[in-house]
Image 1: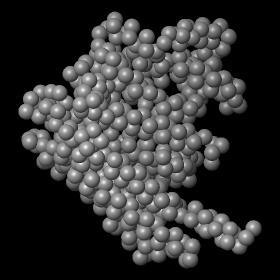
Image 2 (image 1 turned 45 degrees about the vertical axis):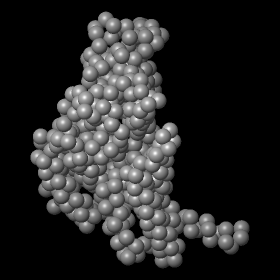
Image 3 (image 1 turned 90 degrees about the horizontal axis):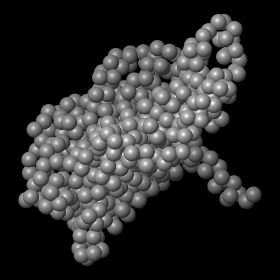
Length: 502
């Protein structure tokens, strides 16, 4: 091997050991892709016009990309020559924290990672917690450009500012008083306020509370070690974390929209604002009734996520129970249950959904029932296969020898040890359920047409695809984004829960 090749290999090994380098490279690449997207969106190929707002945003992202490239080169130089990142280089992360003002949470996260030398899982969670709230506040701020500001807007933004200050304080405390091995017991005082802040929909705060609780109160216990190990493996997968970030952001904006958005703008007709192109007041334009498409997508996220998650709970409980019983008892019980579910599985899901909705009428409840019933056989098969491998395990035999009843063995020993594949499957299926919800609504047999749901918004926009393509493009991108986010998160969660991936 040549000397230069050997040096290159050693340099790659050195760079691979620093999460700051990986994160900065990923953030820079994502920023450059967004710059290209905004650049393309700034030019109307049909009318031959340039959108100055989009062009300005593209230029800002180009400047941010160049800055991040310069920081990345500085990080490389420090690691290769000094074996560490200098304090001066770390201070270059401060300007990047302001990138969130342009919606570039990739750059903000990269900057916050660079600022701290300690990279414990609690600090990583706090970084994403802060970035998520900043994104919610940024999106909500768009409402100040509307003709009428939402009634509770000032109250909502004030509360979010207070929570943001608290989150930043938590991140600073964790950067100073927590590391990979220990966490200062005095940080126990932060647990209750963090738990209360989950009402904003910021699930990163909930995960942080659980992680800190396990480190502080269940230290060195197997359950604590396993949870921390899973979280660390999950956060090594950047695409999984980005998917998780998008999902939690949509949950947060759905919750906070009760105070920071005006529901009337998304449902009431405004004939003075028909077919408005994207602008500061209407970021995604308006539809044929003058309704703000951006607001309709925000409120539609609430419906899509609610239906998607509710449509997973029923098949998870029913299918999981039937699969556990079939796998544990076997023989005649197994044949009866599985053959009945095979009959249900043979019916096309879309046809079954149409039949249920036609029978009970188009409503949210009917839609949840339609999607849920079609998913029962899938979960039953998954649990049955898992139970068949667990039923003869040593701890099950020990439970039987101790006189445990079948019900206790199934629900206390077998089901808990079958949760890992169920959790992964559920995460992936939520995206599918959201897609099914939008599909049925698009066909006119799902959520009633007047309710702002992504399928309804896409259906209304498809009529004007040639004249006003933005009406269909933005809701279509929202559907694609959430399905990809759940898929990325599900893939990362599967790897994190798989013991073979340690």
